[in-house]
Image: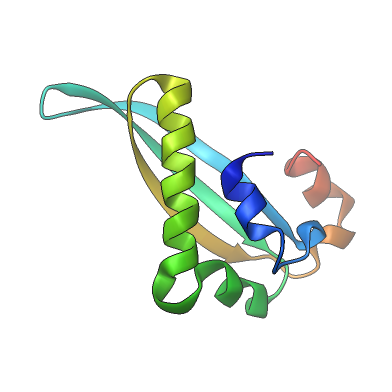
Length: 103
């Protein structure tokens, strides 16, 4: 389990959360090789969305920082990470969604 995922576990039920990287591609920035990653954090309830974002966006910022560090080490390059939090009501009860998320 990544550090970013571990940070979300104590306050939000793990069965209701899933972070999935939807797009990772190479991009050049100012002559340096960089990678662009877009991640969607899917939650089951609107109230979970608020918990994931946190007061003033602080929790989402921490998740993004941790994920960027891990991805940077994995890809051995700088990472530009775009995070989005999305509500999918009752996704934990939908076998197709569970399979789609790789659970």
